[in-house]
Amino acid sequence: LWSFRNEGAFHEAVTQRILDDLVAATQPRFLRLLSRWNVRGGIFTHVLSEHRQEGWQPRCSLPPVHFAGATPWAPPLA
Image 1 (cartoon, rainbow, N blue to C red):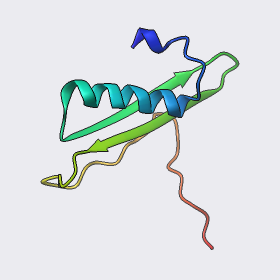
Image 2 (cartoon, one colour):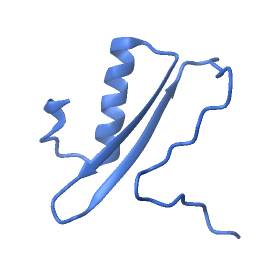
Image 3 (cartoon, one colour):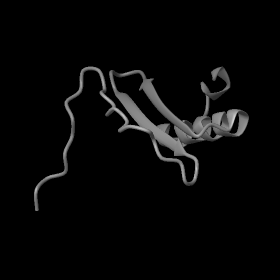
Image 4 (cartoon, rainbow, N blue to C red):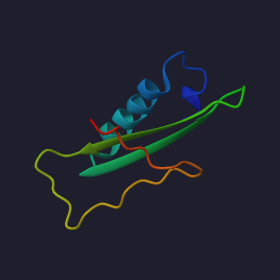
């Protein structure tokens, strides 16, 4: 993970690349990756990325992801 420290890319792209590398190395049926980016200036970003093997279904519903210190976002009503 330390090799990604100085990547000149968007947080979303780096998160997806880390997920892709983990999937290639471990070949999981399901993997959920939450990255928390804290950069200078008090700006922080949380990025959620998931991998699901084709045809895989969970035995039960997966729990929602909660971001510490954040309120859930919902799209505005039309």
